[in-house]
View 1 (cartoon, rainbow, N blue to C red):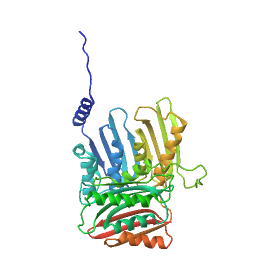
View 2: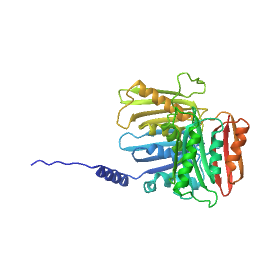
View 3: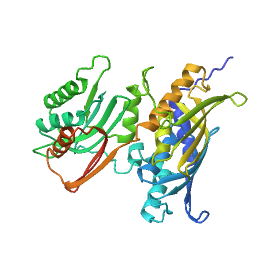
Amino acid sequence: MEITMSFSQDMDDAYAKLIRRMNPPRVVIDNESYKNATVIQVDSANKLGILLEVVQVLTDLNLIITKAYISSDGGWFMDVFNVTDQDGNKIKDEGILDYIQKSLGPDSWFMSPMRRSVGVKPSMDHTSIELTGSDRPGLLSEVSAVLTNLKCNVVNAEVWTHNTRAAAVMQVTDEETGAAITDPERLSTIKRLLFYVLKGSNKSREATTVVSHGVTHTERRLHQLMFADRDYERADDEAVDERQRPNVNVVNWYDRDYSVVTIRSKDRPKLLFDTVCTLTDMQYVVFHGHVDAEGPEAYQEYCIRHVDGSPVKSDAERQRLIQCVEAAIERRVSEGLKLELCTTDRVGLLSDVTRIFRENSLTVTRAEVTTRSGKAVNTFYCA
């Protein structure tokens, strides 16, 4: 008699959940070992994307990661992070330490990934708009003017530009009700008119507009939008300032069947988050890693494989990986003038401010717009 056994995807998922229950995540926070840094160690059963989730929690709290050691070989994940606050001090705030424990410890398995993001909660209070298209002077002013004419108030927004492309995630409300916009016909009009603005006269590259009530992690989504829009592609004749370009190298470690990615670049906040986002989006898994960002230059090293278990297979794949990591680092780099505006919020404020920029020949390369308790706090990077 022959006996055969088969395992379904549901059985695999159930087994993975059982392993997680038997081995819940453990977070150890050490404020004694180092004079100028808090050490956070995270141990858990391994799963795809867990490194990005951990880094996202820390960066959402505006913590600075000065060192990191990553190990996720086999079925276990262990990371150690040295972190400080924005002023270079240890983390002493009990509220922040408690949040880290809840977001990364045993309770985190009962939270959705979105609930692990600071300030991101499911809400029907606003409508989300995602935009990608060709960048040009005055684009943000034109988008803002269209939204104002359509009786939409921009309550939160983040805009990135890189390599002639632009992407934005905006949260808007109805001017009259202050709530989300739900009328399908009106949403269709908003989507159509914004598409026309983004498309402009450029016929060679597509533009996209998406309107929804979904909840998203803004910076995570901007990386996904720009990666999908292929902002990493450069024209062969495009001039590149090699002094400003990050140094990214990829080699294969044949005796261990890994590819090793090394990155040297000027340090800045959220650098680790940006590189891990892109490796995740490109379907690479980090098995081992080391990050040192204690000086003006940051060094990152990752041993990676594709999710199918293979290292980098060709020179074309290697070059694409290098281009994408470079783009991830460059998207958040803003040279030029930084302008901060804090004032009472009102409908049309963003449109008025960006119109002044346009009339004075200033191009917005990056923008962060937030509204809290009736106050608008806006940051613009202009060239």
